[in-house]
Image 1 (cartoon, protein in one colour):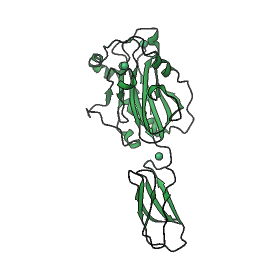
Image 2 (cartoon, protein in one colour):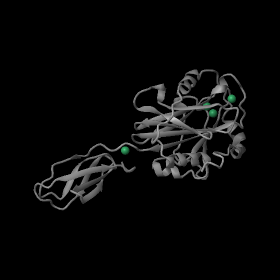
Image 3 (cartoon, rainbow, N blue to C red):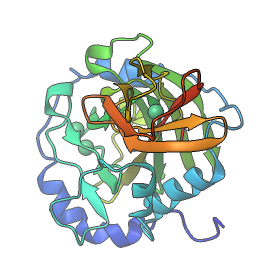
Length: 285
Ligand SMILES: [Ca+2]
Ligand SMILES: [Ca+2]
Ligand SMILES: [Ca+2]
Ligand SMILES: [Ca+2]
């Protein structure tokens, strides 16, 4: 399953010369804070079950470039790269701080360099709803000691983004974070750059992101239903599918609006009938 090289950065090396144009802006050691925050990520094995093998394989394929569009299955909001024929997004320098971060995509991996010395790259990622944010990283360069982490703007730490752990297999590191809806940043550094200036424009890394909604919607709020009503109305998670049942019999189903209101048509029910109303998000929770 992983016998193909995870990522042929050699092939991508063809682009190296064009990439380096964006990487000439020299920076001092003003990125120490970012480096420290990224390095702060402790090694923590990921508990089983957080990443299912299907997701892991999709991420691997994204890094591999052989099937970059499959990750769409997990997320419908990923943006397409402006050049849709491209299998990767190339980093856009200057991206050394939160405000100048370039945009990562759930559909395409990002490729970057860590040049010149002390280069830090920030890639912005948008989490659409509460769930698991997966960040994968890979390099085939011996000159790069790749270290990366997802973080919040300004290095804020709170329950919006919680590190679950990482899995490392055949050169690909996959980190998982339980994240609330919001904008996050993947910071990338070359750890040995603090001591050695050995990176060339041919030394590259790749990162990829995926999102898995593993959080079930809150219980719907249901307005009163009388024995002459032909609809059940209420509030449920935006865009979730609401089902009204009587016992095991489905009386009706409808999608909640983007504002979280729903209206499900039903046949008039007898007085005293017990209705069960459930909400399911697009990921099936
Ligand atoms: Ca860079
Ligand atoms: Ca940079
Ligand atoms: Ca290096
Ligand atoms: Ca959900």
